[in-house]
Image (cartoon, rainbow, N blue to C red; front, top):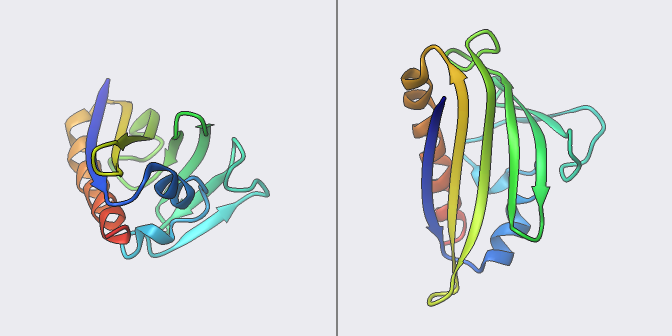
Length: 142
């Protein structure tokens, strides 16, 4: 099983960061990395099963949300190679927020796990995207 791990510290309290990222259909904090978000289906951005297509490329579904633990998990159901549905299975990404109590900031952890015959290619493809998203988040809260 392959995995990715990325993290940053956002210059805002955990509750403020959570309020900005918990809506699966609102990635305004992620500009300019996410330039297009298409909502698929009728579910709101906080309902399990909410689906979206990012940048005309990545089809994702919200799998779980835990408000008490400031975390959500989503699946990537299809995307460009090496993330196509024919190349990757069981792709789950999780975002977790932890308070940094001495500075009233937030430690943001973004992990993913997946099955693929090309695990390193998937990691090499995904890690820079996650790093860019976390940089966008860091800038959003600076």
